[in-house]
Structure formats: structure tokens, C-alpha cells
Image (cartoon, rainbow, N blue to C red; front, side, top):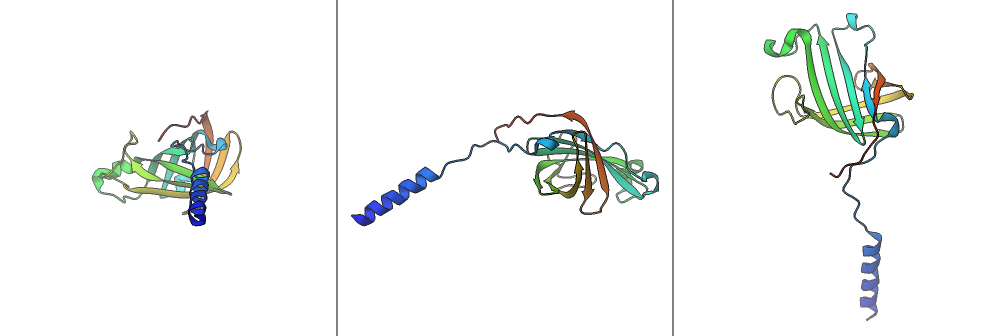
Length: 164
């Protein structure tokens, strides 16, 4: 009898303490919400290749358009496109201390999954050090190549969480 009572109380405690979290996207970081452009690249004329970024952060999601300029052909001639090409990615992001982590996939221009074609496909994974964050500008440093990304706010977005 005592054993049954103990089991009942334990089960009741577990049921009361556990609750299902709502199935909605996360809020993300308020200071990032918006459209951010990398308007210029320092010393771009002297670089063999560089990529300009346009980010959109909405709630816990990101969308990025990347325009790569290259003096070196890394791809087949049909993909090289005179040394200028666009790539796209989307996914989720997280900010931990002074770092920004982006995890997602490469996409087509309409942000639908890209499974083949020119340039990169599959996982998109980037990490940045947040060097400074002001209301109208953010300075990031790529963890992989130590290049700076100076982003300027073009449009502020208010997070409206959506169901997943």
C-alpha cells in the first residue's frame, strides 16, 4: 500500500512538473533584428577574393545573401560567371557571450533548399566574434578567416514569433 502511494505521488509530481513547451520559434536577440548590409570591404581591390554579405535576422532565424568577387577560378567555367556570383543560406542563429553562431543550409535565391548546382551546397555553418554592436552598426570578425564584416542597419524588424 505504501509503495503504491509513493508511486502515485511520484507520478503526480512528474506530471505536474513537466509541461510541453509551445511549438513556436525562439525570440532571438533584439539587437540583431533587422536587415544588415556589408556596404564595403576594406582593401577589396587587393584581395584575390572576398564576399559581401546581406543579413536578415528575424526572431531566431537568419537569411543571408552573399556576393563573391574572385580573381581566381575555383569552379568550372560555366559557374565562374566572370568572377562574380551569388549564394544564399538560411537557418537559425545563437548568440553566446561575444560570439554569433549561424547554422543552416545553402539555398536557392528563393531560400528553398539547394541540393545541386554551382558553388556550395549542404550545411552552412559560420561563427563570428561580435567586436561591437551599436544600434545602427555591428562589427563582426569571422572566426574562420579573421576578416571583418562591418554591417550597417538598413531596416529594423520586430520579431513576431511564428508556429513551427
